[in-house]
Length: 392
Image 1 (tube, rainbow, N blue to C red):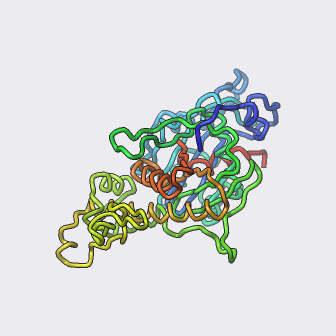
Image 2 (cartoon, rainbow, N blue to C red; image 1 turned 90 degrees about the horizontal axis):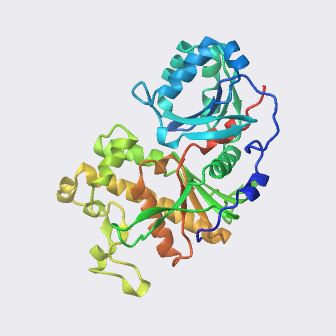
Image 3 (cartoon, rainbow, N blue to C red; image 1 turned 60 degrees about the vertical axis):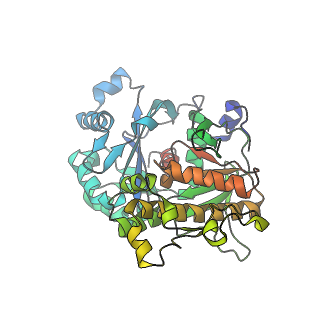
């Protein structure tokens, strides 16, 4: 999957409601939000209009001004809400309006606090409908209606995911990248990737769990299935990593778990090929540093006592990532697709996992697969449903 020249015009024809050339249409009342309420993390995308006319400014309610100021002037909301300022997208168009996209996240477990904040800021007096996707759009539907008198306009999460990816990539020329020089940690680096004519590609979405889609066009995709029509999705994802790390290390957040893993050594926990064979398993071209048994060293009390929290976190991360990589490779083989795109919040602040996935794909495919990663990681579902905003 080699880098290719960029062709905006071709992509623009594929998308709806995403181009500066789109006709002006009726505008739903502000503010505009898109929410992807996942099992672990809630992703919120806020569209801040930058083309407000003098007449609109005069008629604008004070509550709306306060909400805009609160959302755009802060990067943290309470102890757990964060705005990813480095992902902000300026000068984008949605339904003919020009503005800025802001990307905000908070743990889904904090939904009650979010609804309290929404009520206190007066959001219920301004909007009656919020575009939402993800399982939480169903789980929390009554909470929104009861607490802030908001109706969740629900959209399919896979449709929203694909639509969001294509929109963000088209509007951000630096969105896609790959990892180069994988064989040398000191030289390994991110490099931009042009996403021209990517079809078909395998989309691996790593959230609390893992979903795999084969995408053949903007509106043509399928969930990948096996020979018995069993979904090739995995229950081992970001939620598994955080849950196991919390049990094994006592960490309290995903960021803390990643920090531990960054300085850990999984070889003190995992059993490698060289621990069994004394070196490489040459007959089957298996390198000695390949993990043969995750947590395989933890079979004696002495070795368990020697393992640090950091080592356990690193081994957990390697275990989950290797499982995801195996599923992705198997799906790619079954579908005969060499273009792989990895997204999802599991990859946030997680270069270890990205490099592991890139190295695994490169090694097992003999260089025929070069996975691509995206800067906005887990926000695409929220963007995709925001694009559907209407007057309802």
